[in-house]
Image (cartoon, rainbow, N blue to C red; front, side):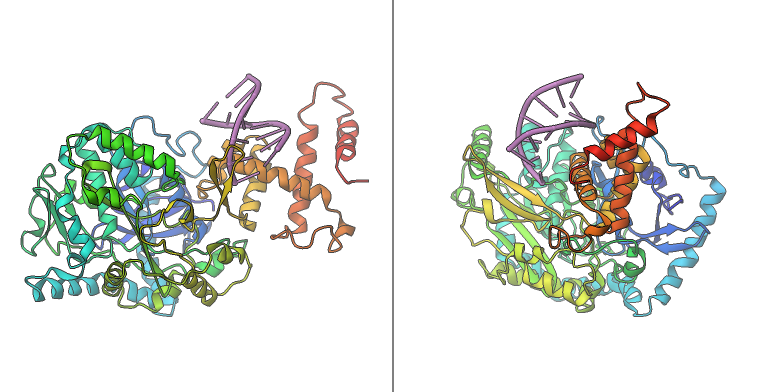
Length: 601
DNA sequence: CTTAGGG
DNA sequence: CCCTAAG
């Protein structure tokens, strides 16, 4: 882990702002397959070897980039959107991750960089070979598969425009994209509803572009390219597809990567993570392709095409009341615009989820008050959970994109299509069985994903799979959600390590420095967990083993860790009060710790 | 915003 | 895990 990060290729500069270069990972881009740029993620070992990044590391990058407002999408070669690089329109107040304390090895010389890059070049192909089961090799050719697919679609069907545009819902969308008429404020609203977060960006152009890119996610399984032009959604012909499009009147709607849904809740992840995931996580740049063939895009447009997925937690968590209020605001603020029946009907947002043999595509059609805009939006599919079985999933779909596109259409045709309604909670309860096999993962992802009934109020039953989301009725009658994500062993270890390094109580530090990859763990979470660990560690005694009060605390924390926790706790409890008994510190401090220990005799 | 503590 | 008070 004592390494540096560098992005191979021309994009280094962009990553500096994200703090990625402070990380210990390397994003290399063995292939700029297309747009978005696809990177391989590797780690530099102490001896200079390059090894494929583990899930945790992938998540680390994801975490680093997660909070950035950005345009340029970074996609791992697993097909996962890692995040984006910053650009000049980033809001000024954004926290710069990793900008304060550089890691010791974040300094890297030019020469080193080059050497590393060189090593990457050698190493990437070799890894392709050593992960014998030719999936990786396969993966890089996915783009070409798709390209052929595009070709056939575009060439073959002159009147109908391929699978996407023939979908009923999509064509409905056609006449309703009209971002131009919206004020900044309205754009902000739309933005918020689209991405689930606020934006401070005032640039109207940028907002429109981002929102339109949000739409992109909607059709992100498409292999065709669409353009919003004069408020109409049109499919680009092959020839004109790459012409310059004035962003004020036309917005490109490219197809981008397929978002996988894998909900491998609390899959084991401990010390051996690195060994078990290296092959499993590599699946290839599915769905990433160059829509424009050989014709190069202007840099600006290229950036515009790259999207990031929504990030934060409470994306679709407005309660019904709030939602109504929200709509009310929107409507009132867009009084000029006719309110269509459609808009009110779609108040109950139909959510269509498709789960097909492990590959899940989720969509949401949101209506924005009277604006007449329907903004499809991808649920935040995952809250940064591991993608361990990507490979396994992909295995069943070597044909990748084309297949998925078909599936999506199918899903849209069948309106309230009910997939297996396996309770998410049930699935999640199987959490952290430390040694699950990929097969099990597949099975699990298959059975989850309840889909909401059309016309039903979405509110409470939509769970984004990003954790065990349980709705809880509060005393005041309100409802709130309780996310639960069991702590994995590796998380606990990181926490312990962080506490030992930075001290208990400096949670934000620990969060920033040791938990950058776990965006879902807040500093408060860390604090709480530490509190629990303390409790656990002090309630634990060597004789207690096994005959313990509780059966299986879900995740039995190994004794060594508990001991370490206790050790740290004792250390910290005696360090703070140096005021008195400085010399007898060991005696009085140490003793008092023991005495205050609950259950210790 | 961060931390600590109660629930 | 959530909420809130306190710096």
